[in-house]
Amino acid sequence: MVASVAVLSDIHGVLPALEAVLAEPDVMTADLIVVTGDHAAGPQPVEVLDRLRALGDRAVLVRGNSDRELVAMARGEWPADAEAWEIDLWAARQLGPRDVELLAGLPHPVTLEVDGFGKVVFCHGTPRDDDEVVLVDTRLERWEEVFADLPDDVRTVVCGHTHMPFMRLVDERLVINAGSIGMPYGRTGSPWVLLRDGHVHLGHTPYDVDSAVEHVVKGSGYHDCRSWAEHYLRAITTDAEAVRTFGPRDGRPAATPRT
Image (cartoon, rainbow, N blue to C red; front, side, top):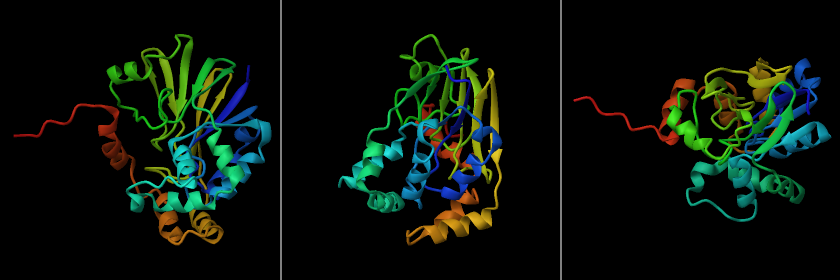
């Protein structure tokens, strides 16, 4: 049984954002840090993996879809639409053998006993699929499909993937999205979650975005790094835009055009 868990997600290779969150007192004192996927697909992939390794046994890394895809790319399986994957392809080429081995061996999902919560499932997209999309306004019928194989004694699910933090009840289960450390939508800074004493704290770490952008640019060899960092660290993509983009992927019925 773990007394307290700090949950981070979707670092996407942004070291200064990760460092800012790791410096939070509640994160520093948590018994365990669970990172729910998409660790390295970004401008500082090796640096982020090295920092996560340095946490030792305090960190539990869960596989995200981008981690799985980076492994495939590093092993020579290039996507057909390579232009859309430019930074991912670059990041895959930076990985050494031990980085690929680390990412290839990550589990999904991970179940832990947390004091005050019982069994908690930590996943990336959903417990059954690291790339499945669920949103704060996903309909209950879809959630029922997503949780169909989940044991009844799992009453809390923590996920990431969509880069927008939320907490809601789904037919008596508590669902928490930890948001994104490195590619937040709708708000600058890095969201994270703390589970402790049966309570959920939705944390948010502001940091000097100007300095973080410069840190990423100087610390990365990616040719379009400044443009990437300016867009994602400044949260140019709004949450509303992201919900509209992701919405069709949660199985919701298509909107009926007005006549």
